[in-house]
Length: 195
Image (tube, rainbow, N blue to C red):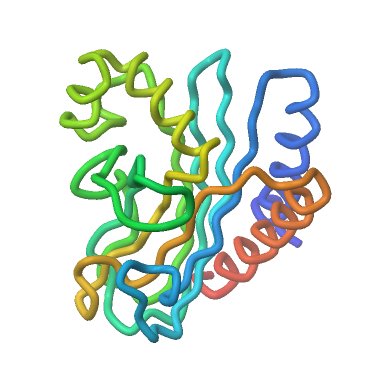
């Protein structure tokens, strides 16, 4: 196993371990077509792991996705929906898409850290709707996630409104640890394919 592959495997474990010493909140999302609004029959799937640190205001996004019918055009987090785990909402995070998100592909992996104190991490209209401050946007965003009213989706050429989506969930500790191991494995496989 190469040094980089080993880091991809160990890093999530270190983050999870350090979470016990910091104020870090983990979230998971499982994306698919039937979860979209309106639902669709896409065979695409995805997983997302998110870590929110309420001390340094960093929001880490780690995703993997595959099997999309169209090629990717955008991805971001929407919030808040009117009801938990249903309906749609405006984009809360970076528009038109996360910085560096892989576009023009049907599968991929993605990692980014959003500094929630920076306006560049937000859709400007989301800041406006939440007190015209990034602090207001952050508070509303985290509340929406905790209330089951925030989802991440991936838009494609075949389904421009969103081919797959998943609501952000607060996992049980065992589930989060297993998901992080799974993401590390996916990262290692993706790295080998590109090597």
